[in-house]
Image (cartoon, rainbow, N blue to C red; front, side, top):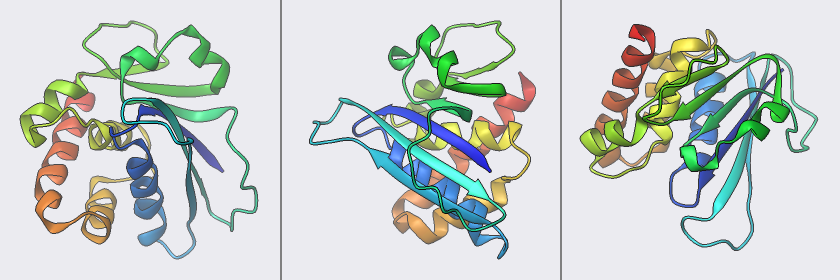
Length: 175
């Protein structure tokens, strides 16, 4: 099983990304299963939230929160600290939306806010993270993500988010 832990703020789309990842994985192969769920209370927009995605080739029985993940994804670098490494499995990766340059081989950085503003006109970085993830996680492709977007997002948001995923994917591969 692959475990993904999303860190975001209310309104940044972390739970939407968790669901899109699950859809991308399970829609394209009948032997793939996914579970995505949020962890937040009555917080307001901008409050820290966590979301989870579990992917496996067999039915997922464990519905507990993820304490150690294969991939940690941060929509906002203000949520990132060295404590994140406590949530990372051995050989895991962190994808961080930031302008900072970080040389730790466990961390993939991308200027998600600038990309999201360019493509969406809003600082919503969830699909930036999906594109970056597709570049480093072999079981998800841009085609799978596009299929999930077509089945999940409203038509007016689909083309912009597909283009954003493709650009994030390209930038991570070129880095």
